[in-house]
Amino acid sequence: MEKSIKKYFPVFLMPAALSFFIVFIIPFVLGIYLSFTEFTTVENASFIGIQNYITAFTRDKNFLNALWFTVKFTFVSVITVNFFAFSLALLLTKGIKGTKVFRTVFFMPNLIGGIVLGYIWNLLINAVLGTFGLDITYDAKYGFWGLVFLMNWQLIGYMMVIYIAGIQNVPSELIEAAQIDGASRFSVLRNVIIPMVMPSVTICLFLTLTNSFKLFDQNLALTGGAPAKQTSMLALDIYNTFYGRIGYQGVGQAKAVVFFLIVALIAFIQLKITGRKEEEA
Amino acid sequence: MNSDKRIKNGITFVFLLFWSTVFLFPIYLVILNSFKSKFNIVGSPFKFPDKDTFVGIENYVNGIRMSDLIPSFLRTLIITVGSVLVIVFFTSMAAWFIVRVKSKFTKTIYYLFLFSMIVPFQMVMFTMVYICTKLGLNSVLGIIPVYLGFGSGMSVFLFAGFIRGLPLEIEEAAMIDGCGPIRTFFTVVFPMLKPTAITVAILNAMWIWNDFLLPYLLLGTQNKTLSVAIQIATQGAYGSIDWGGFMAMLVLAIIPIVIFYLFCQKYIIKGVIDGAVKG
Image 1 (cartoon, each protein chain N blue to C red):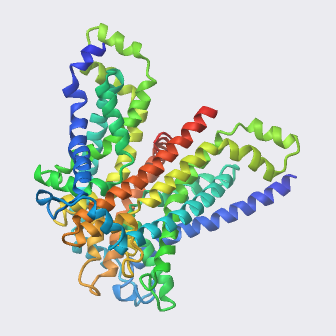
Image 2 (image 1 turned 180 degrees about the vertical axis):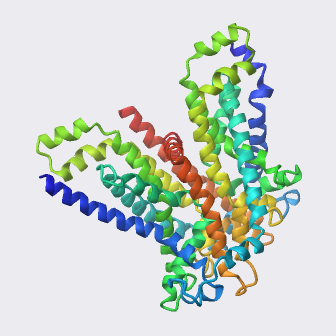
């Protein structure tokens, strides 16, 4: 059977693989090469070694600022989103009236696109700050917390449904047995529910981590990096280096490679952790 | 005990009701302002429209006109539906081939697909735009194969995971009965893939419908999609932005998503959980 399928490579694998090579593999390899060159269009690239990387980390202050801003934002988002999402999931698995409607409402923002989300929150935050005569571009801290609120609004519902699925998989006999043994509600949560939903916790932590770290559309729409690029996250800073500064394409590409390496490292750690969890199970 | 529990549930209910209201408030605020005259939005955004500020559907008329919203909507629809169909069709075939033909080659391709899932878009953005523009893929229909390329990582992964669990005997029986691989796939395998196909379709549809950067870079402002239309509506000469029309645009952009969500909620939630847990 395998042999007869193999002959059909052009029909089955070719279309997906070809477009994948054109839009991903070739640009990826070319991108790594170009990060070591100076260029404005791809054709006029001249090799300059690691100069772009040096520029990205020294002369170009924006990159390290963006990296620090992104790390801070990601840290706060991961903690807040998962705390609220898990709490809501606990409340929504108690069989309370209206659970379905609540779940629908909390999940909905997740479907709205990043650009629209950004402008919705731009309106709301400027409306609140406007009563004090300020707006979101007045100080970087407003943009920071604005992004955190936005991220919570968008991701809480998403993580909540994953936590709900995890909690519903906890056998009710296990909880009842603990209760019969006289465990307090807190102790049931700590010693029965949380250990049983650890796989969901790992998934949600990494989903919020990568989603926050790679954020672009929401950042562009909410603050656009203002004031003075202080609220630019990594993806936006890379975009602006490519398209906003002539002659800096090589630096932009070098920043993109560093960005990729950080995201790959996060993914690698996740793979190690989930792999180990599965061995234990 | 029973009344104690009822009180606790009552408190939880009120708590959840409060947070649902908070969650809906941003959308409520946009809808509210979409009915106010553009001069009364920036100054007093929380005020309910009264007889001086209420403008009926004027903002909606302006919003649709100033941004070519209807062509943008149709373009987004064509791109999303076209890409999702192409992705489901070709990545299910690719995944079946990869799972059934075990060679170093298919294994390498599979791992490359997986690898692409962790690479941020900015890494390939500039070079991809260069290549795709050279190949003439910077058009409404041309962007569909581009989405196939970017969507294939996750889609092949989800399909391959499902196909590995399918019994080989059914396909072998079909082949022995004289079905070629193409007929076997479409009459025997593909119908069994339906649950994963729905998940793949929903995850890709959500991404492509809302995508901004790829259509912005490839299609520009000439062939703008909805996200692009909204983004560039704010880039007009500063101070002259019609905020009323803009609020109406936001509402119009949200409506189709909410309708889609309310009708397909079951599949969307299942798709999101499957995609997250396996991805």
